[in-house]
Length: 364
View 1 (tube, rainbow, N blue to C red):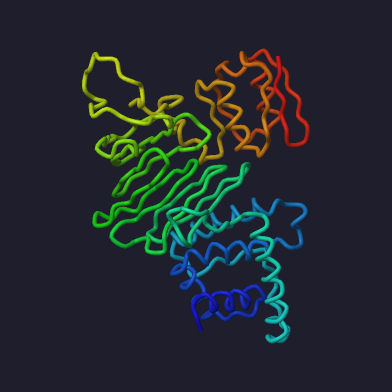
View 2 (tube, rainbow, N blue to C red):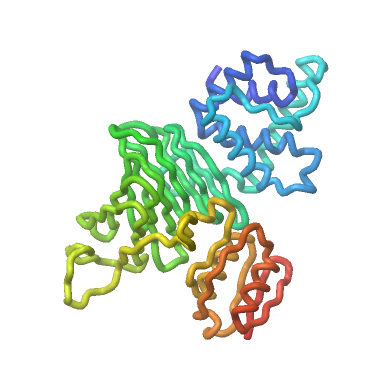
């Protein structure tokens, strides 16, 4: 039996409560060997467990929580995760459960693809078979086959090819992600974005590259990374811990001068080397606070704030008045809802707002 078919067969047994300990261990081993199938299988399992309360809890949140449990358990090398809400083991005949399970799993698969929890790769993407996407209003954590941990922010996607882990480890990123890369000196880890490529061996850093934003940011927390500009492959910048490189997404060409060299000649500003920002002495860098579910505005215009609100809460924000768009805001919100955030922003800015379903209108 093909591995893919075997995974679905064993998953049906597990969901029906009829899998033996040996079958559960085999399923776990197969899912680790085939992460492209494991992500979809995890989604089906989440929907199965949540079938009794799917109207009360958002399916996407359940999927994201399951991804985190899956990656945490894999990191701990546990044989399998047994959720306390699975319930008592059934004693129905195995054949009957297999038939019912197959129908239910098929239904769950339809729901997974309709809701967009795991999507097929878009045309022209780096990966042909491994693609994870988060909608606005959701975040995910996943573990790559080499053990690298990835936190994927709202409105983002990451993909990697089926030969990931060969001579190099390459992924394609659109949006924002924090990487804790498993060290492997023999196989460099490369992240491709529309503006830059980031090459590492083992380190922790954040990459922010949304197509609708003006810049791409690479923020290094520990280790070392080399950033290569797509507009000029000869331009390579080595970042040190706590450094951040900001590159204009509108840059077409880059001169062959070093950004660290003193040069009094006027040149187009295409990139800036700066420091990551700590809100206080002992705090985590503000650039990665989103991984701790904290919404941060760090001297950002209301136009930039609006983009973050759209991704964070899954809403559409309309700003009426160009003057409002340029007002700057700084603040950290920990588990606050949309109304609480807007009210706090309103206190420091002279504007009014109206919320209509999934639309926010900000006006003078």
